[in-house]
Image 1 (cartoon, rainbow, N blue to C red):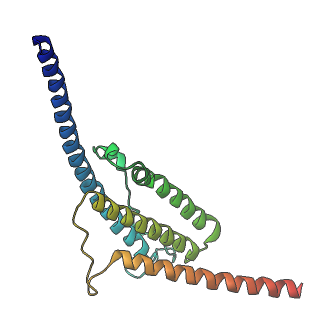
Image 2 (cartoon, rainbow, N blue to C red; image 1 turned 60 degrees about the vertical axis):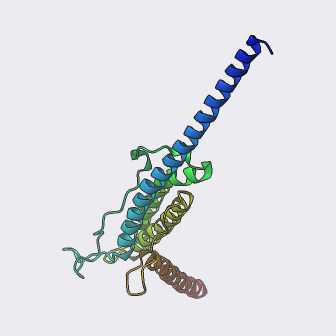
Image 3 (cartoon, one colour; image 1 turned 60 degrees about the horizontal axis):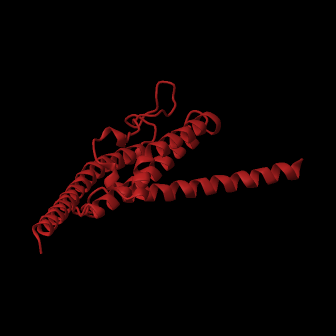
Length: 205
């Protein structure tokens, strides 16, 4: 084998080794990017979940009392989740999961529109019952969705799973699930009463 062949083999081996080195470096970087993203965003989602639970727990009263007009009014500020405010490498996530996380603000906006509509067109003073029910339902649903996203992020980032509260501790996730069940039951009962009332009106007409 002549000198030129040795030179060519050396060049090929050098390129190959550099490529392997670069691949190994990028693999390590991608892993760190994913871990950092999972930590930052799952923590932010956990905070959002707690904020949602606070909204769901609100009954429109301040220290058990209505406002100066004798009406229930919103006391708890709704939580916000702005994923694009975090400097993380979003491309480290699988596309479907990235879409779910980044689209959550749009779902929050849609929920707020539904709540505004319920207060404006369905609810009436002094209790604004339908408005508060819609607010509780929407934020309970958002809170549970955010909880599931945070759990998925912890799993793909190989992070410790969140400790489940003991029966003696307040569990915001379980609380929101129970409130959704309560609201759905109340709405079914209200719809049934409304149906009976409409039948009576039609029969007496």
